[in-house]
Length: 175
Image 1 (cartoon, one colour):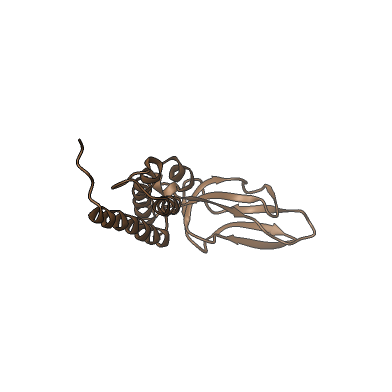
Image 2 (image 1 turned 90 degrees about the horizontal axis):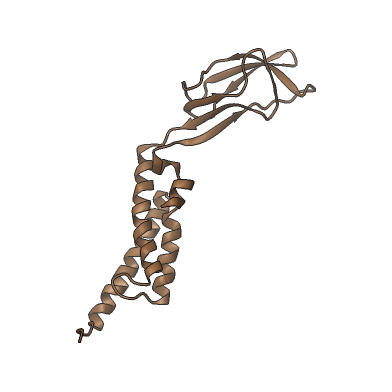
């Protein structure tokens, strides 16, 4: 579980962080910030003008590429900013689908991870079964609907392989 916690913020109900940089071409290495239209904690939508800059005596409007919430404002009106510097750090909130996919992947990943580490699931795993379950474990900790579908197919395949082989050679009674 530490792997999804570290690399999949949606499992903790957190969004993806995003930086909104300022990019401009000018003979001057910096621009003057005339106005910042968003405050910390305030939401913004895709296409919103979040700041206005003065670059070479022209006003440049900075628009957001996506929706999110402003976490921190790196510069204020009246200040200067270099091209390429981050103006706003934001967060794109996690969707219900991302949260569900992350939790679903974590549960299946834990099940798939336990089989190769114990070398046993329904019965002792063979090397091909172990390799399939190891691959499924890696993919399950990368939550997307595509990898979830592939992983369900891989884990189900191993489960059927083990069930079928148990029917062919029943376990001997303990003596």
